[in-house]
Image (tube, rainbow, N blue to C red; front, side, top):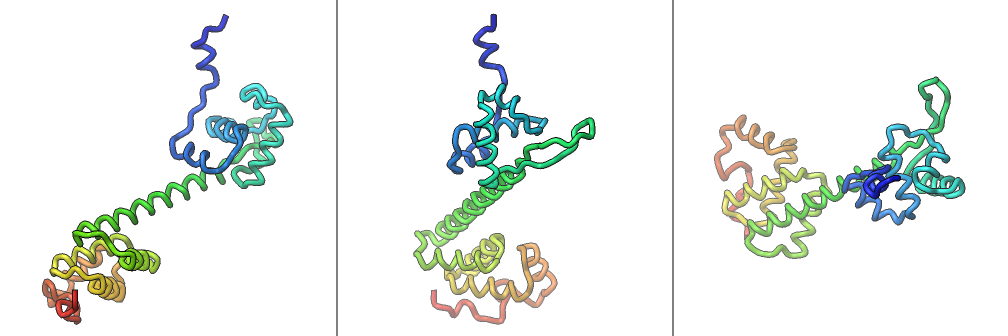
Length: 211
C-alpha cells in the first residue's frame, strides 16, 4: 500500500522562479502551464500523448488541444529528431519559451538599471528629479550612451562642482566625439593627453554655464 509520502513525492516537477513569473504573465491555461513545466523537467522531449496522459492526467484530446494552442502562441514548436535507434520522432522544442524568459529577464534588468541611474542622479543632486530631467536621462539612453558613461559624466560634473544637466550633456557629447564607450576609454584618453588638466578636459569653459 502506497503511503502519503510516496504519493506526494511521485513525479515531482520543479521550475525556476524567473520562468514561473513568466508563466504567470502569459495568460496560459492550467494545462498549458503543466505542459511546459513537464517538458522543462524532462530530459526526453519526445512528444508522447500516452505519457502525458499518464503523468499529467490529460486526455488525448486535451493533449492535442494544448499542443496546438502553445504552438499557435509561438511558445513551443514540434520538431523532428532522431532517437537512439536513428528513427524519426517528434520532439517538443521549448527554445521559444526560453527566449521569451530571457528577453523578459533582460528587460527587467535594464529597467532596474535605469532606476539605479535615476536614483543615483537624484542622490547626487540631493533632490527629486524633474520630469524634464527624467526625459533627458531617457534621451541619453535612447541615443545609445552607455549607462557607465552617463554615470561617469555625472561624477565628472560633481568633481568639477557643476550640478547641471546641460554640462553633463556636453561631457557626454565630447566623449562620444572622441569615440569613448567606457570609462576605461575616458581614463585612457586623459592619460594619453597629458595637456588636459583636471577640470579643463574640454575646450569649453563649463564653469561659466548657469547652474
